[in-house]
Image (cartoon, rainbow, N blue to C red; front, side, top):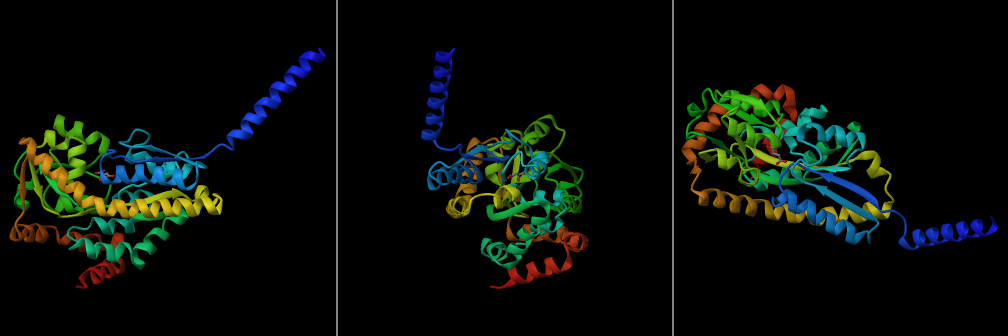
Length: 332
Ligand code: LMR
């Protein structure tokens, strides 16, 4: 009996020593997103993982789940609020689902004339104030990531606003994007990114919008004969974390994660345009999708057709915010 007791004690001590030698369990950050690993967002998420683990010397483990493998667009925000996932980088079009409708200002047609004008908004007081609006929802906004300007695609040429009449178009869940499609005479259908390829293939929808990198990596180009480089709208992201999780981290860990994110953000912003240029070339190279770049005059026609959206949606977004953005972007 005594011998059994001593053996048990020795085994227990051995396990405890082993646990001590291995150190405490790392803090796990599940980082879920809906795009492909090779996109700028996908690569920046992977870079964040590497840097976060290095800078915290293994005290943090980041698990990146790309391509909607953990959550789709429609359920990722609720999962973050519940703490089932700690980090996301949803497109700005998806924040109105949280009740923060102001983010839909980023979806207004032709609102940002250039990337420089956009950065004046995201890196300035407007961008910071918008992120602060997430806190009552239990979310901290840490950074903006970029994915550039969107194209339109369908199985017919889309040259003039009249070409959209009667088309069913897959969109993200933003009322501003819906209004924009209606202004073109099309019918918007809100759908998860992960379901878009199948819907385009089956004909459940006729067309869609996205920057080239998403069109290529989600295989949309394989089921769309025409793509128009229209730059009619902007696609960006906010990197967000569960507030309770973030506030509960030891200060030194939070500082290391902040550094890791700053470096990943610089990379993401510098790579987004290259990524989209590369993707557009790859789409053209397949020879299956005809790529058309709108002329300045044609773009002006699209702009006129979509112009009423700004007025229609000002009440939803806030006229003051729309005016502030127009003022900020107008500076030369
Ligand atoms: C979408 O169309 O849902 C995408 O913009 C998603 C993304 O994260 O880029």
